[in-house]
Image (tube, rainbow, N blue to C red; front, side):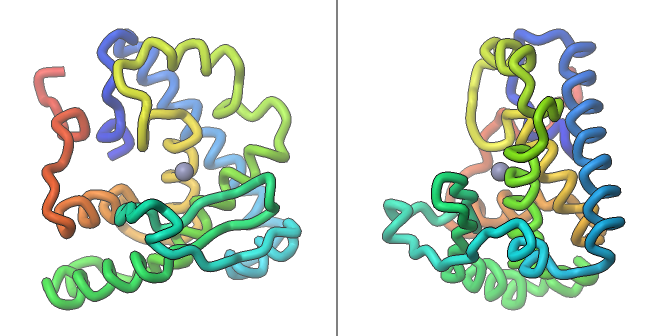
Length: 194
Ligand SMILES: [Zn+2]
């Protein structure tokens, strides 16, 4: 599922696989540490322990962007949550009946875990997803957006593990895009020829 986010063509498959594997590894280490240290506590409690505020943001503050569930603002020691977008996605899942096939899920909490991974990256010197070497490698990607960074792969994987959901949180992104009447970028689709 993680490969879905990759748009690069200039990295070899071996390099790309290594980035995915090591980013997922960084997420798994963080998951073990947090699960051990905070033993089943909510993302809200972990955010508080990290000294982070959780604040509301509106679509208007995001220049009307309808695809952002949450943002980490290290300079403000805050995670900003767009409850409007979360509520719209929840409604869409209920109305479409998709919720019946997804098992247990909590979009708000998954979004918070995602942003908490970025906070963990901030406070973990030498974490793979932030390494300079990797940043150079990423310059070779054709498109630098959305999932196309090691930090995003790590955050997606970490939030899946912390939430205990049975599907990739990438699904939320896909649904938001189709819900808002946009086409999913070709680069995000599985390319079986690769
Ligand atoms: Zn992210």
